[in-house]
Length: 431
Image (cartoon, rainbow, N blue to C red; front, side, top):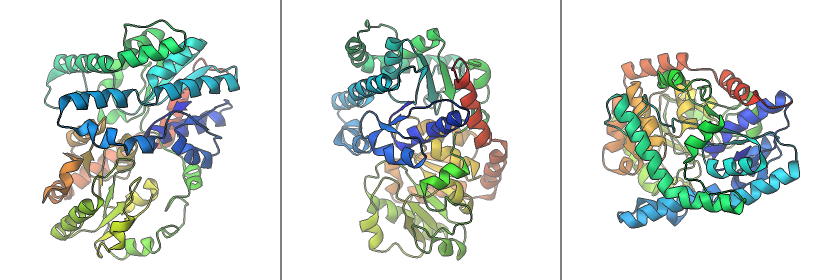
């Protein structure tokens, strides 16, 4: 398994790795260097692969250049980010396969598929991929808002594929040349389709009605992937161990939760919050206006300096928390719209405000809006006066809460989703 990117890109696949091991497969797991400790706590004996994703997400390239008002700078940044770490992934995965010997399949997450597929092609191995949102052309889920009908939707996907191919073609062919492969004029989706590669859609079919029928068994929709209780406990995050008070790392959190109304959860995972002080001020103002409390999880951000100054009785700042344990004790969520967090929030039956940054996050915001359980805003807008309070006011009502509860009951259970993903990978793989 060649798993690069942020925690949201890697952790769902680790659940599948554990299930494949349970079934008797030998699974060798390569992950981004900064996520080696995470995978290690799960007992997967991980190998560092690619580049440090936290460093990339915190770099000027991502935080400044990708958001530049200058179009040339922005395009250059998009091209650089699209191929970031590809050389390191190629050399690392090649070395890993040399060490392992006798591999059947290379399984990749959403990022680095071009390189992983090329390495697999060079070795004559099977390729499989995990997708956490729709990223292939279809007539059901539009890649941008405002489109009507399957024809316009497919045209938009075709344009998006051409744009990405234009950004990555040179870099991909450089990696192929380094592997001794000929250059290609065909983009990756078409090549994976022609090779019969399995592309597992690790999100819930109830949110994208009609997509499973359009794509068929080669792109099975499994449901959102998540670690089981035992694996979550091994991570040691707040609340992960059944029966524990939520005090292990954040003293008094359990008492704080018990002593008031269920709070709004606020967390942006691995996304870099540009101004933690401004975000906490916006959260506090929204809580005061709406008469609610908020539990803020810092994720990969450092809120310590701001939190040390005091955030008031309405707002509690904590470190990493176990979503499955904490979210059911909340009443709504404000998050970045990553697939893993989206799945956890939906399973907890919470309405949501998606404060999106990029990639698949705006899409998840739109899908939650369509399902009647959420609204979406650009993350940078949430610190503007009244924006967060207004967005929360739209979802903190009984009707939205009832829809979120009803939707949670229709989702594929996590264990069944992981088993379905493993089933898809089992086909053609020796034990």
